[in-house]
Length: 425
Ligand SMILES: Cc1ncc(COP(=O)(O)O)c(C=O)c1O
Image 1: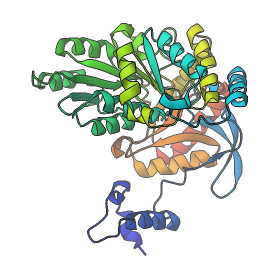
Image 2: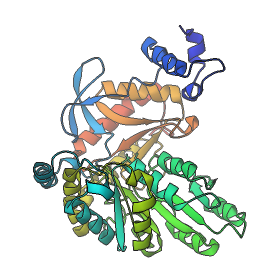
Image 3: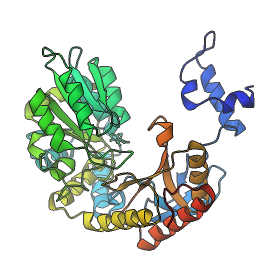
Image 4: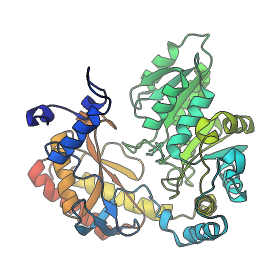
């Protein structure tokens, strides 16, 4: 058994490595015991079960079996496309025709014309020559980066980039440089220090940052990339279908669409399905199909998902997925939170952080919100630094204004107990 004082002084990262003389799996037993004993707080809010589809408000099942309704502010299906009638119908047709799994990797017998159509639609959406679809978004980043970058190359990252980007960088063997989030002067200082002979250079940034909801300064990044001879990869997981004048994402927001070399995105967020993609030149895509190991060695996306996504991209092409309604809800929530004095950072998307800055309070607030019928995501280490911990609210098109009002009211009530607002009105 582990003493409770010992437990309280330890943190998540203390259980990543084995101590000297310990059996390899001892750390897993320790974490199991701690969670079971209930001494370590913070995980109560994790692991809910959805009882119905993700819409504005719906029943969930807690770990103790209790079923209750929550206002859903924790889903990335921002446009509710995962439950869109036409999208689901198209998925059903393909399900009937091809079954529920592909049984092979894409380069063997894993793809259909539906998959090819999806790649063509994504390429067209970005006005690029070609596109590749990976069966997972995480795997897309890992595969693309580790295929294109190698020992001797250098990758320059915003510190807030997604974990899958950093994992891809590590696997690539390239030199990894990191600049503080959104600090363009710091990016230039990093670029100035790269030796002239190191010419394989890639700047990688999230388009919309997944924890802050702000948009990368692609206008500046494009200029710096040209000045210092770098290629650019943008992971627009949270931008596609939402930001930019017709929903084509962060590059469109800054009008630099033709300057991005690797347009990466996830099919799991606003598109509502699963998978990841890259749109780029035909040479790059052909290379990735052979060298990206998470593509080559991983079974293809189910045809049903690809078929649903084709319907989604038809809507994206016409900008008819309901972005205007989503933006009304985003702006409404942001205005309410700001008026009430909450610190929401610099969100420019459907991701709205509510900064708490105190992990103990964060866990308690998160738990109480949930008990009172509001589901939000909890964000702390390892996703962000502990002192920047926060709640992360994700807005969905189908949330009603009344549901948003109620969620903010509950937050305000909890603030009377925890004092998290930066200013009081
Ligand atoms: C910016 C970003 N990139 C990549 C991913 C991974 O995508 P997926 O969840 O589809 O594997 C995520 C999802 O968490 C993300 O937020």
